[in-house]
Length: 182
Image 1 (cartoon, rainbow, N blue to C red):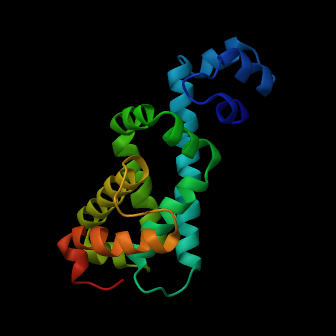
Image 2: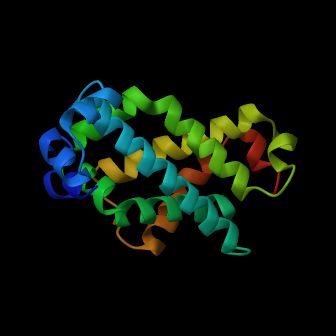
């Protein structure tokens, strides 16, 4: 992780990763076909950890005004706080978009898994897996928008992100969720 933090995802050298991990370059190539596969694996692992943290944060936060708004806000804040993933967004947004295209289904699946942790027992079954997947897709699309695109509305603080989520994200929720409370 330190090499990715220090050099970014595009400039990381496998020799330095191997040296820091105290393994040979050959050992890395036995596990990964190349640098791109290693980068994808690191991002995948970090996203898995991040989505788990977001789910636990929301679950432990207690009753809030709107679980969808709070989940969206927590996702943006935690992603921005992540030293390596946020660096990728800031230093190389084109790579972030490229990886989003390549790994979109996996990211949606991770968000679905996090939603199963966040939702009360039985809620996902009540609204249906298709609705949960549609929510995960909506979360990912709006998150990418907030993280990668400029905005006329400031989106720097938690309150600003909440206001954005209330005004723009909530109305875009799947219809089945707008009529059913969590």
